[in-house]
Amino acid sequence: MRGITEQFLCDLIRFPSLPGNEQQAVEYAGRRFAELGEVEQIPLSNALREDKDYSDPVPGIEYEGRSNLRLRVAGTGGGRSLLFNTHLDVVPASPGQDQAFEPRVSVNRVYGRGACDAKGQVATLFTALSAIERLGVKLNGDVLAHLVVEEEVGGNGTLAMVRRGEQADACIVMEPTDMRILSSVRGAVWFRITCTGRAGHSGSGGTVSALKMAIRTIEILEQYHARLLAGSRGIPLFDQFTNPMPITFGKLAAGVWPATTPASASLEGVLGLLPNKTHQAVAEEMREAIRDGADEWLRDHFKLEFMYRHDAHVLDPGHPLVKGLEACCRETGTSGEVSAMTASCDSWFYSNQLRIPTVVFGPGSLRFAHSNEEQIGLDESAAAATILVRFLAEWCGGGRP
Ligand SMILES: [Zn+2]
Image 1 (cartoon, rainbow, N blue to C red):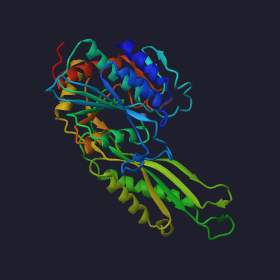
Image 2: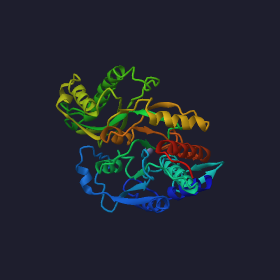
Image 3: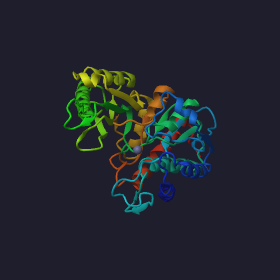
Image 4: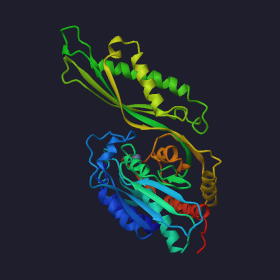
């Protein structure tokens, strides 16, 4: 099994499938998964940009000529269906990550961009479904998979799949979770705040620094975050974390000259949210917090936009999806800990929009994702594939050669 995973994963890593450039990886995966079931390339279109849940952190990205993949391994009938989702796009190489798209295998671990996030997930799923095929197992229920693009920029690939509608009795979104079953997942909003000031010479007086306004905005939002966090305590599974929903200010740009007061400043960041709030409520509260932040100038001189908005979601840990997966983990010597995800991912589309019971699960560790040492253990991937084979037999029924 390990040989299949390693080869498939290394092949996938060699495609530099940054958002907008995934098509070769999509076609390769499509050819390989066609060995196991019916594969359709689902074309994307620029009309996606009109969707209310469209994320646009990369302006002007084109959709013509690009596609997602949908896989269906038809069951013999009468069983429950299971839908998988994972993604083929990756983030750019990190500083210090040489040859990010040239896979390296060392001591049973594969290194390279996408090794765990999420090409290692795609390879794990491929390995599990290959094992079922080789064992001659006929499942009763359908196995479906959405292998998507643009997860890293807010889930536009998954959005396109969800808008076509899909029916399934449960969904597993594969991301690196250290094999924990994440039945609660937080949401997030990516925001851009543009502050305007009154530009002028440093000696002229009467100027208002947009840069200072942006810094004031950071203070106001830090205070808002503290209130939001305090009001979000006591939610099961999230409460073990000191701050399951941080605010991060990732970009600040202002000014052109040391002795000129800047006219404009742009501040970008991300704020997490838990299931006690919708993304709409958080967006409105952020706007109010800045408006009421006791700065007369700022009140009328800021613009707040959202590039990405995901709600949180919760599945009862007693649901058969969670219980069944947990049992399969335990049987194979993995703890199967049920926990909460303190990041957001595409799972909310299935849970909240299609009402499919959904968890996030997969081999590999989030701490290596997006890092200059991204990697996955082949043993861990093999363990996850074994868990998925058992769970598929259990969930979809049949399972006898
Ligand atoms: Zn990622």
